[in-house]
Image (cartoon, rainbow, N blue to C red; front, top):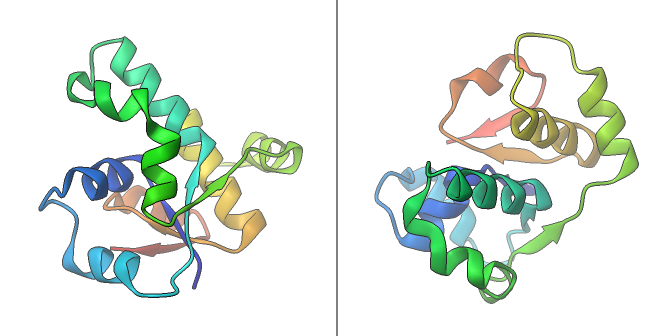
Length: 128
């Protein structure tokens, strides 16, 4: 199973935050496990920091690519196909960051590491 980290899961992993579930932590730490971080997470973290919703991530923003790479995670760019699928998604999920993560999971066959049960009805695998 290839994993895509939701933005909060990435932040909690990098910060060593106990809110990351033991199951998620174990899956991410499994040797050989492919873990991906979407470009949308960089966009979301930076946007929320700029508007004051994530004040404690200044150092993370300054060197995010290095932090992600040092963890052995792969970066997942946003493709035209991801954009198309995100734009066609039905349902109540209006958050553009979440819609893109859903689309990336669908297109690339990924499981989303997230504590948010709102993803349960989106047709993707959720690990928590």
